[in-house]
Length: 181
Image (cartoon, rainbow, N blue to C red; front, side, top):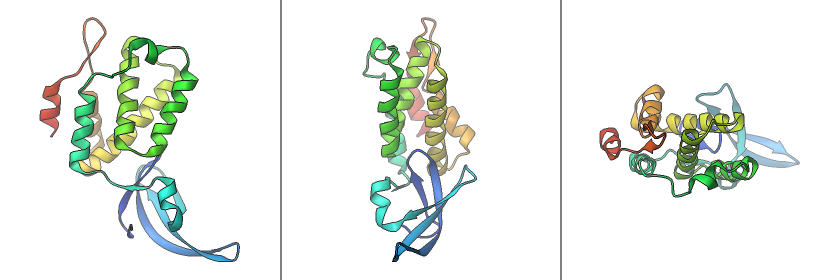
């Protein structure tokens, strides 16, 4: 169970702190809520304690989980260029949104890696750019808290895995993983 003042991850929105617990009368029943205050947004929400699992709320990742994401980012995508750059953005976007809703750090990292790869093959569409920015922000926010670095440093760490090669191909460097651990 979570406790007041604990930092948690709310899928698709990022890190929030449980600011308080409340009881409210809903349809004649007393329902207990956590009030979540997001760290990087001027937003608070109430989440019924009984539905925490279904919302996908989770604890912050461990340092090892962050390092595992760095390792995954250092490896090339397993999808081929045509599959990722095909014109069916709507289908890919649905798949990506499902991955974001899981709240899984690994899944968010995979979406980020795919979009960074696509950006080396073609100009990203407006939707792709927004999704890339969203995934980078979600990853950087959690990395900065867990690794105790500022968010700019976390973004720098994420981007360090993707450098442009003269043939417009992403070069993933294993050296980056060692320097970030």
